[in-house]
Every structure is written in C-alpha cells, then in structure tokens.
Image (tube, rainbow, N blue to C red; front, side, top):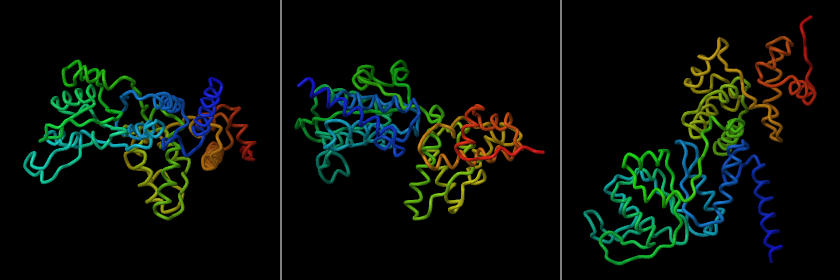
Length: 350
C-alpha cells in the first residue's frame, strides 16, 4: 500500500511539472518564472488539505485564478466554486449576500434567497477583498467558521453547510488587525495557510508569455489572425512596471491588437502611458530590455521575436557586437549562439 501511494504521489508530481512547462499554463495561470512556479507548487500542496487559505497580492495579480486552481485541484472540485467580491457589495447587503434571507425579512425581500455560504455546501467559498467586510459581518463569519452553521435573515432555523473558505485581499491584514479594522481571531482563522501572488514586475519572462497568450485569445474572440510584436513594442512591455499587474497588461494588449489590425504591434500601438514611461528613460525612448526575450523555451512566437530583436540590434549598431549585446541585455556567448541558431550574419561596416 505504501509503494502504491508513493507511485501515485510521484505520478501526480510529474503531471504537475509537465503542466508547468506548457505555455498554456497551469490551471489557467500562465507563467514560467521562478515566483510563479513557487505559487504552482504551493497550490498543489495546500489543495490536498482542506484548510482555510488567505491569498495575498496586489490588485490585478490573479488572486481569484489562484483560488479557482486550489478548488480545481482539491477533493471539492466536483462541488461549486462560489465567489463573492466583498468590496462590490454595499455594507447593508453583505449579510444577506452571505447568509441569504427569508421572504419578508426586510423591505424588498419578496422571496426566499439562498446565500453564498449555503450555496457553497460541499464546495468552496471564495471571499475576495475580505478586508472590506463590516465589523458585524466579521463577527458573524467567525461564528460560522467555528460552528459550520448559520441562520438566514428572518429565520431562527440553524442551517449546516460544509464548505472550504478561501479569502483574498490586496491589503496587509496584519496591519489592519493592528489598527483595529479587522478581527485578530478571524485573521488567524482565515490565514491557516497564506499564499502570496507575486506582482507582474517581479515575474520577468512571464510578461512576454502573457502578452502572447492575450493576443491569441483576442484573435480567437475576434476571428482575426493574432498579430505579433515588434521588438520595440515588446521591449516597452518588458520594461514597464505594470502597477495594474496582469489585468493592466491584458487591457493594454487588447487595445494594441485592435489598433494593429492584424499587423505586428508597434510601439505606437502601446498606450501613451507606457510610451511616456519609456521615453523618460533614454534619448532613444527605450529602456535596455531585460533578458526577457532570451530564455531557452519552445515557444515559436518568442523565437520569432528573438530573431527580429537580434536583426534590429545588428542593423542599428552596424555590426558592433558590444553595442548590440548592451541593447539586447544578453551576454556575448548567448548572442553568438543565437546568431548560429537563427542562421544570421553579423554584417560589419567596411
């Protein structure tokens, strides 16, 4: 039995590693960078248990996708994934959204309504922006987590619900506890396992992977061929700090694809905010690109972008290797290896 269990564990681990190598991503999350691989590994580990998870990260980093991945990899995957954005619900309606209400419980309650907690029975309840819950709701939620029972508004009947709770916030909950805006006991209940989602600016190569994926998705939706990126446009995407994270990148790429109309996306197609950010860096209007373009991966689109970037650097610097590698942000050995790989000639001036 022990041997069989170990075999299953190893087979599952191999499957997870293979899925991480796929450009399409892991459970809807796209990334090859070390920070994202660490997130994938943590998801696998915590999904096997049934503990509460607190997902932390800046706005737009994909915290709900992480929560869905945990649900899909857990024993509750056949149950419902029920999400509630606490910041989007006015405070007077938060209790009714969570616990439901009976007919006539308050003005406008014309029929019984099932709440999110009850709806998540045998599944997962995801509370996004949990720090926005009112103090009253924080106390009631704590009781529900302790007793696994609740009452609908307007009813005295105790209802049992078997659910797992995943919570997320962009706030520092420990600081919120320190200043008295969030209950300490609820914080400890939610943060049995805390998982940090990295901001996009810390994910290196993932910017190109995500941009390519978003272009492909737009092409599928619009029914038009997905454009590629010019080296200058990709450099701008790589060098930008992305305060809005993945959500901002997605919106930027979609807008650029519309402007490009099937042609390669140019720097001018990128939003003015990004262009202004790049123009403030150097007279040429471009930050030296990171090693973003030059990881060794099987992605065809990235290989095309690499070849275009090298060709542009060779022409711009008239065969000056030192200047070209500075622009590309790679070593001489990588530069010469890529010349050979793409069958490029180093044209020097006579």
